[in-house]
Length: 196
Image (cartoon, rainbow, N blue to C red; front, side, top):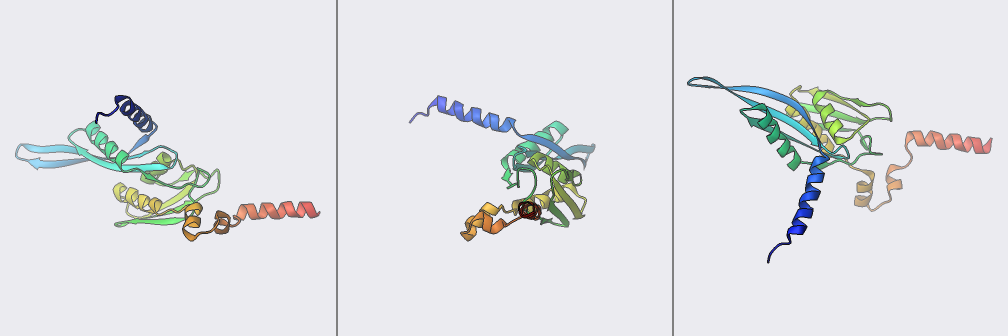
């Protein structure tokens, strides 16, 4: 059965627009040398983070003899490995979490509005491409960008949203979240005004 070329074209167009929305950031570039008979042969390894700034992010690494080719390979791999991360109010994490990979350990903490991204180089790139506006992160252990990025992704992949927890437990979202600290003091102040 012949496929409809028009429907193929539509799919391709939506894929292209999806790919064009993605933001990529080069985290690190490493020059490596292989010693051969005639001397040294240089190659490059690139680590790239890709995201849509709306809750999807991925990372990839690529190696090649030239820098642009290594970056291209890393970007392609990152686009294939995108994960979706639930965000609170589209600006921060739902809860604090610790991510681990190898010797790397990262602590990711939700932050109030206006905090900004307080994180080291490789982690900052992940949060910027993810679309997080307020977060506090600390890397404990390794300073290796590969391990830091992988530990960050380990933490992000284990984040839960109140909606998913409520669905899993068969409860309402309001039962899971309750009142947050800021909302609690506001409601008490409103009650005091009404009474006074």
